[in-house]
Length: 365
Ligand code: AOF
Ligand code: ZN
Image: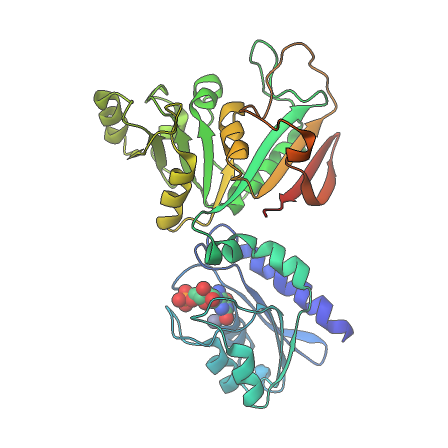
């Protein structure tokens, strides 16, 4: 039906309100519509709070009778932290349900089948591509021992992230930087290497014109404890900081970070004495994190690409030429042959003032 798309797009917009705060749950949005008009709206705002359907049905009240429920994820059929949405839908008297993506979580699945058995008209797959994109961190977390990893970098037209002397602020313009803050807001953690902390002293916080933006966990990969404990990234507040290091970091230094409230993770080292990134990702996933944004620098992004640990790339390119021996966004060993290079799929581009954003997925075998 023509209205299906319109209402589902609104439900997707509502789902985005929960982005960044719902993890490890999925961001879900819901619209209750009757006679071509919206009578209730809802979204999931985090574990333990109402599911999107429950919020929308409460808003609709008696108007839900005979209405259609549009929801971006198949309604759940389980008693988790909240009661089953299927029960709320049946009780409301709504007589049709349209959803975008089937719920692959075995605990919650079976909602559509039960609704059909109770005589509700159920349709699936409306705006499925957009809904899957919004659910990608959560869908990934259901089948992977690691969080979904996005590599982000900003370069000049000639592919540099800084001048030969190390100056990097700012290559891209304000629109691209605002977009990068939006990315930070959508993930559970932002990760950088020791060299980036030493060179740029980034705060790694979300700075958007929002009242109280959700702050991601800040993760610093510093194998030898070289970063100064006074760095902005270790500042109290926000969601806190994690320092991923190895036994090679001096004990006194580790204690100094801990005194600042930093969560120090001593992890195994790889053959070159660096933090084993795969182990770090598995540890973060075990702690409930579903998405990580890796913001550099070149050495850290090189380790992630060499290890095949990137799921998505988001690059910002500015129309400026630096030249010389400026720094590269992705170092590491790199691909020996072009056939082994990381080629992105489902590429999207967007103009951000004079800059360009290029985004794509890394297909894994
Ligand atoms: C829905 N609507 O808005 C969401 C759903 O234990 P809980 O209550 O936190 O449930 C989490 C699971 O419920 C989650 O893994 C997913 O399968 C489903 N999420 N379902 O019908 C919603 N957020
Ligand atoms: Zn539910």
